[in-house]
Length: 278
Image (cartoon, rainbow, N blue to C red; front, side, top):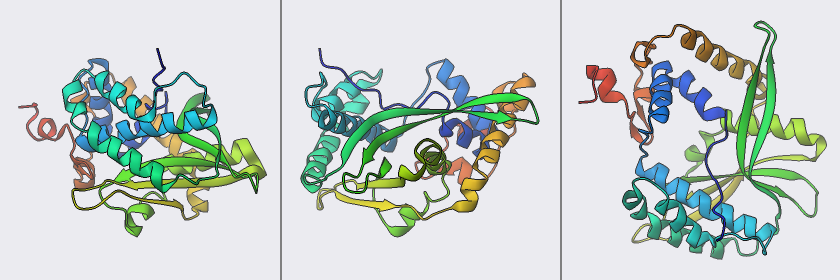
């Protein structure tokens, strides 16, 4: 039976640190919901996950055409079918498959040498003040090499209902992308080319999907202070975990940008408002 690749998050990646920096209570509630398997996903996240698995299979088969993997379109169906709420995920399969076909057409002539797909990068980050070592990981969607220059790049797939300059700029200071720079410079040195943002705008009934690939603006100060940001987040998690208080007693951010995100309201908004889910 063909293999279905895992496009999920890495073991101890930026998402958990971003969440605790955004709102400690949100981090605690998210961790609790993962343990009890009560995790739901917004439609945008479902579509993004399905497209990621399709692209993972596309590039894995480019690297090794003989690999025993599902085709990209079948991989989308397979990931949707594997979910507990498969019927909800299945609603988005046709749109994602349509987008993948349009992606193939747009980038049929790409000359990248595929080096790795869904690669988990790992680093041990030392905290000298507390004499601790924290495991930090990130999963790279795609690692490629330019055949002419020999430079290596990490390609990150991002989806949006609209791709605009401001959509792209919001990722410049993202810890996810500063983390890629951290790994790229540390692992590849002079062969490191940078991060490529592979933007995909969803098609509509009137318009096909749109695609663009851009390099993010440099952020040297953010790169210089990235390690201290990771340490601050890890210390916050450990300090609050040691208090052994329930998630609802962790401090809340109470900020409109934390309580209401680009995907809609925080899933815990009602609980923070009333102290209960109902």
